Length: 297
Image 1 (cartoon, rainbow, N blue to C red):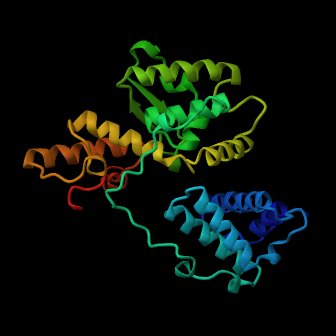
Image 2: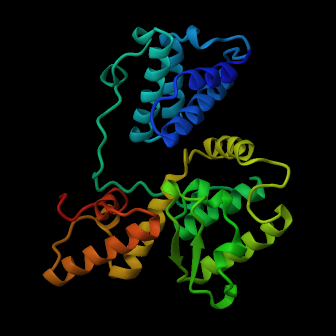
Image 3: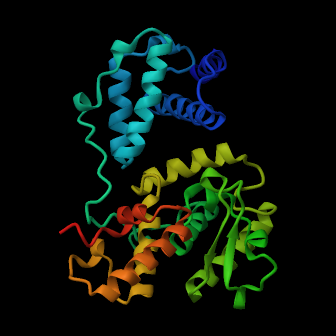
């Protein structure tokens, strides 16, 4: 029995947490099995009970190499500890400090954006490349860009004069549907390309012959090779561009600190809330992760 199969059995035996928590745990464990195999371990004969400190060390090293965020690493470590606990080997996993996993920092005023201008997509699978361009143009999450269906997104509009795209709840994090405004010719160009590809694929940017899961594995391999990790930096770039468009000057993560007038402070708050909604968040504070904070000098 493969490691992935035995992980599924473990999840079936210990159904803890909400449906979403259980689904995320299964997904992470599947990822661990895939990554351990890529590192060189024989996961066809490996059992969950074989977990050792060296496996944990190798996984953490791989995540860091892939540019995985601190928050994501912490979430994965929670699942690693769950695994260790269920096979009665909690001692195989140390605390986060021992692995030098720093405390999560939300506001750094550091520019964490990724620009497509720095990436060579010429040899990249056309569907993956177009998903990356949609992330860049509309601030989409990875899953949203992969499952993107132009016909649904356009909501009966014509690309040349469309005012927005809509995102289906089944594509989005937390099942929260939303709309994103169309404000540039660049966005229309990417919609035209996505539309042409989706026709070939039967509706979305996932090839006909692939499931979401198999395409995701390909996507992760490609983006890891490009050095952009989970591609979250593209959302940072979108948020920063929108702030400049709406505010008239760069956000602190890009332009550094400046004193705002009272009128600018009011406008800043309104714009941050708008960008938060466009990114699929409901909290204004989360925008500080993307834009930085004027109170953080």
